Picture: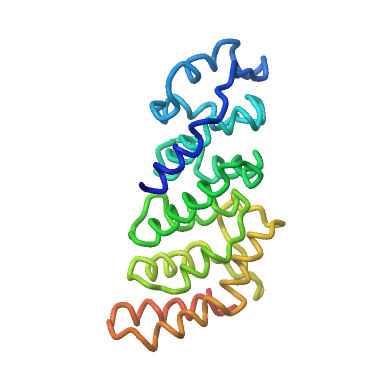
Length: 234
């Protein structure tokens, strides 16, 4: 089975919420009833979007979120919500404490598969920049994702790195930052990504790729990335 099928199967035994109460100022008394009346996998993005944006802040708690988690991740990974953005949905996964769930292994496998799929296609939807920020919001160790990207095992992965370095990485007085407003700049995952980009590992990966690639367009992208990773890049 796929990582997505495994995800749904892992959550199949999660207790079904009796109700889905929210803040009375923000959520109507029976607004959650339609979400509880159908199998989770049958819920469309339009059904879940409002809950996805309000979950655990003004609507329900971590246990209710765990019930909907596989469908929320499935839809967010497909960029199916107009709102909320994938970064918001994945961050709520981290807020819900998924690493303490019995389904942790299935969630980890899904997150890894989501990133692998992202790197395999360019352009991707959501983009690699969105996907990486979303994964950071979920709160995992970023090293496995960065190591996979650093292998530059495909042309799409290389193009994603070029796009990320040119559009997301910003240098100010020799100091790097990431432009996506959803990044928690005080978090460990943010520091991991910035240090990977600006601290040497990404640069080393690009240098290693030079030695094994002969395709001229790819070599030009690698040269551009090297320039973009230098502190004085515009």
